[in-house]
Image (cartoon, rainbow, N blue to C red; front, side, top):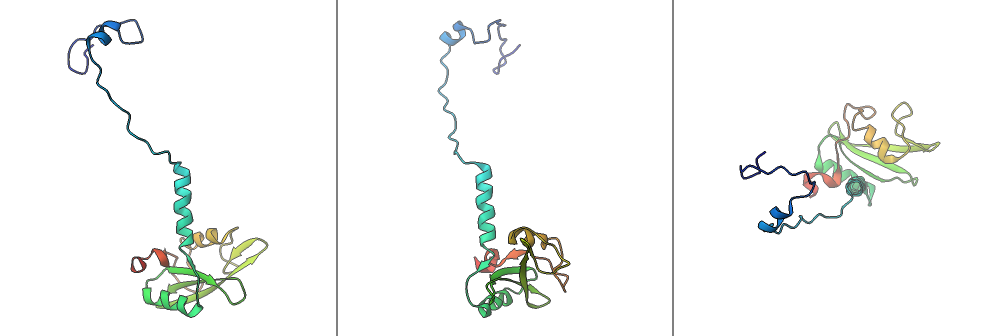
Length: 151
């Protein structure tokens, strides 16, 4: 068997390198690379948290519609507080901001009774990335805060 330098290696029955080899050759000092102690799952959760936090708009409802209108790209959306204390989804669709009241009944969030229902607001919104919103052929695409025009 040859070693990494192409020279014949002596066979040894020992599982450790022979003591002769260790004495005759100075082993280079190799330090292991530094590894950040980051839990990948925790990092993904942080990214997910940041993503879903970027959907919320705190401010006047007129300003929310103005932001979505100014971006003017189908599927860009935000969630604002409604007058009744609930939530309202505002999304650009069909050349204008459309507003959908987010309902919560029996611990399920939904926009339309016949549409997707979910245990959390985020899960319900996620469904509308794959399902057309009511009364349009537009799906959700980008939270307003993550749109390039808002960076």
